Image (cartoon, rainbow, N blue to C red; front, side):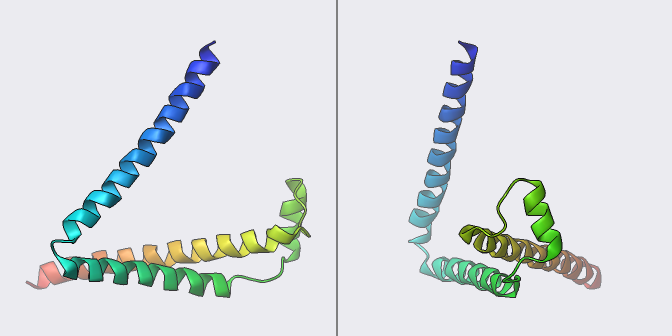
Length: 119
């Protein structure tokens, strides 16, 4: 009986997260319509993220090396399956994007600190 309540609570939490995310996006779009220049900046940011992701995706290996094949086999996954390489490249692209964004954040922090000291 208590497992059912846990399941209901999890589904309710998922639904609330979806509602909150949708509300955040919709409210930001409504507020941005008053200032179209902010939409251009937001679109440029999203386009930049997509470009960084596709650069990382294209740099990801198209074939599994022996270490990756061993890791897949150890986890009882078929390394020769059709989707394995696709997922491997998607994860590589996501990891590259994360690394680039982390480096940009650190560079931005250093720049803002140095600029504040100079002022």
